[in-house]
Length: 376
Ligand SMILES: *Cc1c(COP(=O)(O)O)cnc(C)c1O
Image (tube, rainbow, N blue to C red):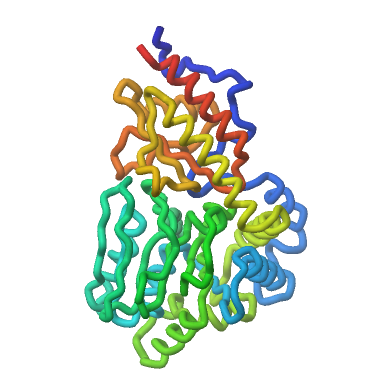
């Protein structure tokens, strides 16, 4: 017997302990918010040029170096504006002439589009794979100085392996916005690994972070020396100099920095990247095994490329995923809607480290309950 969507109440024992499953902004742990509130009186509203704030930035930078086990000479850069601003900064300060891009969804395509629009760069090579399929990777080409690909394409739930293309000499620049902190990575395989705190780092948006190899730092300095015009706020030599002082060029969001430092500390204290990745593996196994076994659901992505940080699940036509997401939202389960532009009958569920694997298991039960009541 079909129940009207707005009359479906999911029983309390089928509700996750936290209802936030969005892929960004994503769940922020309440402990982080409480820790922020506790320093509210002497941290928020104080100068970002003074030790109180700079110590927090330093703590985040050192914590990230530890979390990713960065080799000597790698540096943690940060700046205002999120990963989208980093694309613009990279178009001025990292790409020398020509980049090559793996474009497998909205975000990786946007990165390629930024480089394509830059009048001072050659048209990039763009290697496209349809959403959901195993990505065709970069390949060495002597005309390319920077190879770009996403660690995780958040719009489709496809993940890539971070590896230098065989024989390639250019820099490897990885969009790790939603992969960093949840997926394993070997720093020797990248030169620039950039991200923002609102995905695996369970924080708030508005800043970018970039783990840079010595070769990337050298590139940043060399391009600057060519006198290419660079907008001041996007100048990576400024970001480099400011980051080394645990500062930013202009005023950062202090709450965002605190939440980042606090979450990185939590991730390191729990056991580092391996612990985080194991947690995401557990959540991924739960959601994909459930979908594989389901008569009305199936994982969207081919098995070899299925993301362990953002799961995309297709539904049979007898279930309207928009209605499903609406019912879940009305019951406090938030932001599981699919990426709109993908246009599929789908839910997208974040599996980030801050999300309890047990909550992913409970979520599948809440979805099952809802489906039963929606079916004719
Ligand atoms: C979220 C996301 C971005 C954009 O990040 P902003 O901080 O909002 O600019 C870019 N790339 C990927 C892969 C993302 O998931």
